[in-house]
Image 1 (tube, rainbow, N blue to C red):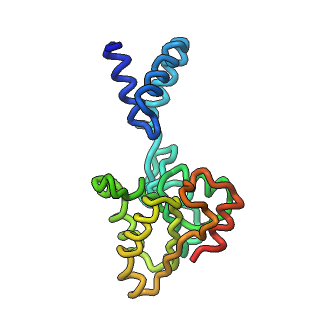
Image 2 (cartoon, one colour; image 1 turned 30 degrees about the vertical axis):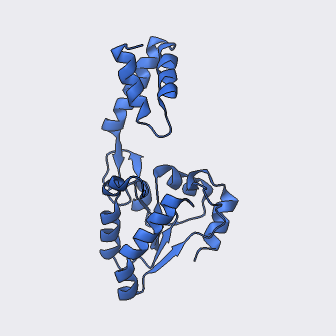
Image 3 (cartoon, rainbow, N blue to C red; image 1 turned 90 degrees about the horizontal axis):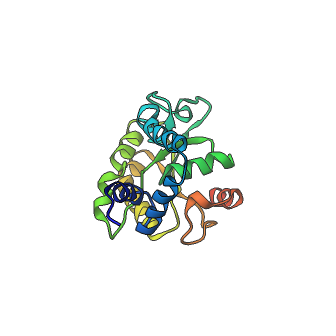
Length: 202
């Protein structure tokens, strides 16, 4: 079927993580089966991402509102001495839901990939280095990245990037303990697994 509207909408769905051509088409067909009000509400809610959702200028988390910084970054009770580096927003949500970390966050926006070197330009690596350079409050950087090849590659890159700071001011860089099984994404880890990984970080 070469209907331009269906094909174009399917292409939009394919841009989402983990969505292939067939699943994208199924989404389009499923939307068509909904009533007109549902489709209009769906479309208007997507548009609100532009008007009512922001990315924090400090941790790069996505949040509702148009403030410069998110509520976590504005919270004075958070421990500024610990900075937790995460791949994506879903990882941060999992951390907050389980309530095992009270420091600050930084979202990279993805991981480095040996197969997709161009991805490096989209990550907030330069912003990460600047944030750590701009304050002496940060004493420990915790790399809480998925236990995958891409996670390991990103960990090594960040450790090398911050090597000068570790020597200059004694900045401590730790990794979550291997309570996380190889291949595990942080987003799907339960509370006990995350707690164990934190306690055994090194």
